[in-house]
Image 1 (spheres, rainbow, N blue to C red):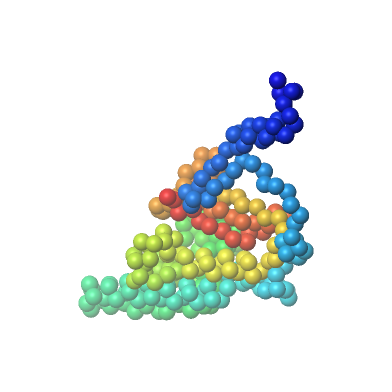
Image 2 (image 1 turned 90 degrees about the vertical axis):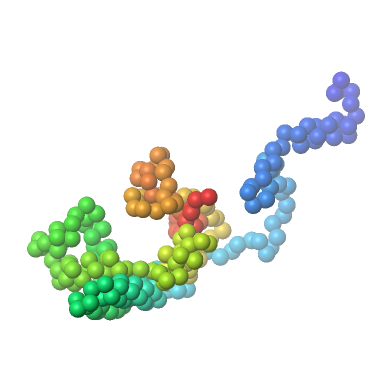
Length: 255
């Protein structure tokens, strides 16, 4: 019986039995994961995190809401939007003029000030929960909507909405072969860099998913019935566990 086994042999047999119950999983990348708990060792001094989570160096000295907003939506991002929006508008205008000689149009170039105003109006429309309203309703004479009229003409807003771009359309097809997020990749990378620059994380991080609801055309839009929006873009976020501040994000682009 097992009671009559020598202690060393019994310990060896129990170890073999335990190992037979361990499951090993292999990821697509080739990395292997096991259900066995790793052996506990003394933590090396180099691996002990002593820094406190909190505001990063880039965010110190912020005094106003505008300054805080421009930490994450920077002037460099706006310059990118200005450049690519003008590029797209000039291309479409040139194509129109070639097809309609004698009825030539001229594109009035946008600039940083106008794009900042454009972004502000988009945010304000969200504040008013106006996703189902027409531009005519937003540009109405209702007191709380007069800011739209005061900022820019409705037709100018409409044409900016049409031409707004975040990448060079001339090279997009080639980049799309390698990256489905190519139309916004540069802007997304700049945004993530600012997230990391503005915050110092603690030693506890977590990864979770978020579904950004959208019904727009997108070949990597996801359907998750358990989420309130059901259809949208799925983003995996790495966040500070204490404050839920996002440090890095990866948009799920499908298989």
